[in-house]
Amino acid sequence: MKVMIRRAEGVLSAYVPKKDLEEPVVETELDTLWGGWVKLANGWILELPEMAEDTRLPITVEARKRATAEED
Image (tube, rainbow, N blue to C red; front, top):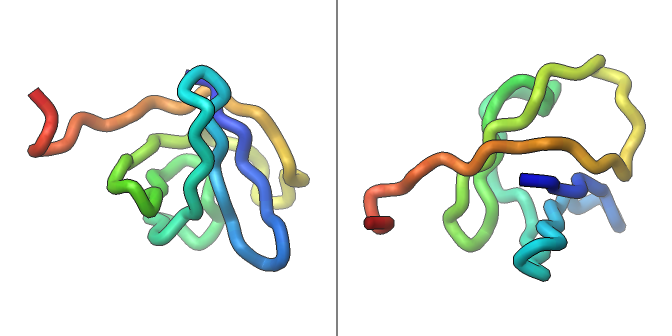
């Protein structure tokens, strides 16, 4: 799914246009962000693509949502 990653006022957030959903990032797997997962405030876990560490934000990327235990 397409996801826009941005940083506003020091807070990293993800916007999913298809769902009209914007949530703050509450946890990251890697300090560099890219190539790992991020957890959103609503509980979603998104796998982000590998990118250069100095990639500028905002940027729209193709992310994959992990299934969670609560989902069918």
